Length: 184
Ligand SMILES: [Zn+2]
Image 1 (cartoon, protein in one colour):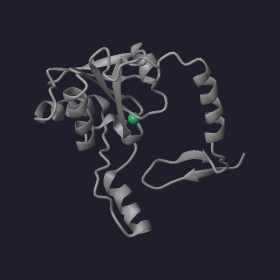
Image 2 (image 1 turned 120 degrees about the vertical axis):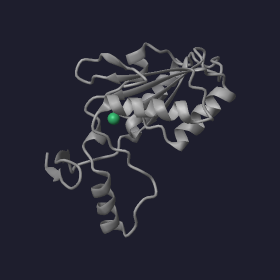
Image 3 (image 1 turned 135 degrees about the horizontal axis):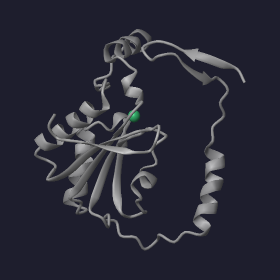
Image 4 (image 1 turned 45 degrees about the vertical axis):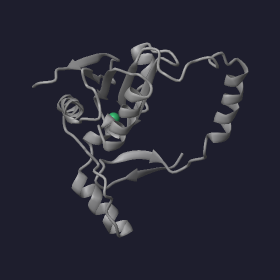
């Protein structure tokens, strides 16, 4: 298999240049899944009254990590598990329309956002595309202080009730959660 080296603001990451989309295979999986489907009676409101905000990292199976079942919690994910306006939008809806009251933040070690520089990333995009994005990349150095930052944002926004808020860093090397206190 041929491999190419991606360089730039990201550290050098080896990725294959041979790729074929997986969707057809995944649709076959879905047909198999639907044959034994038993969750048709689940309510739209999460049974646990819980919303989890997590990084999109492919190594984190939120249901397995927390022992959750289908229908028990909302899972809101993006790069870094960052509290953006859109995450606040989701949490506001989750709380006001679907009754969730508890929030868990799941950040983790070895995050892709620890490897990029916002300025370099945007400069590269501008050089290549002629335009810089309006959004912030929100890179960080330390997942613990980043989790604390996210907790602070939720404590400060008027749109979300953060009375039952806890934050954790998931260690991708051993599967353990490490709780982060709200204050340093
Ligand atoms: Zn991550």
